Image (cartoon, rainbow, N blue to C red; front, side, top):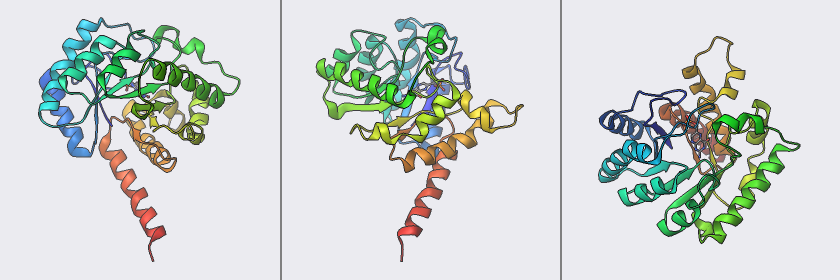
Length: 264
Ligand SMILES: Nc1nc2ncc(COP(=O)(O)O)nc2c(=O)[nH]1
């Protein structure tokens, strides 16, 4: 899943694809790098980001989704807002990627159920201003797992078929670095729930821990690609990344190593 932030302020690529034309060019480039899906977002969820009105979010993402769907790309819409999810479904998106897992907008579960789209429910505890204050866990794996199970219960009660649900541990959302590493080390705890699992580590702060102190954000693309391999080995359904080429290459290494291991 290639990241396409059509926003002026996303933490690692804000403003670069803010125009519709630039966004479409970048989406096609992500596809040529090997992306199976393009995740189109119009509101930055980085810590400290302010909220964006749904109308503004839709003005950013719907023209992009419409054109990319017209060109046959597989699109997810990264939104907390049910009105944006409904508009994206009408514009040709196949997936709703809701970082709040339905908590931010009470209408989202029913809108997602009615849309027939696949729905990614990510683990989340609060909007950006309060997010870091809630990074408190006794057992992060058990608690994130339990909270995602309660999200599934709410979503299915609203009519969303279980087979439409993808789960995501929400790396970097109300998590300290060691929480993220523990979640990555125990992805099986989420895969065991019987839903596809998505992982979004790309360029996130916790990856800085494996880099020199003066490393820039783009240097996190290498550890991101390594995490993509770890996620694939744990059976992840998708990884959400900015640098698709790096992850595609890393997954090619894994595929060749696996085939060599199973070969004669
Ligand atoms: N499902 C899912 N969606 C996401 N959307 C945005 C971000 C924040 O990253 P960005 O600001 O680079 O888009 N991370 C995730 C994530 O980890 N999982």
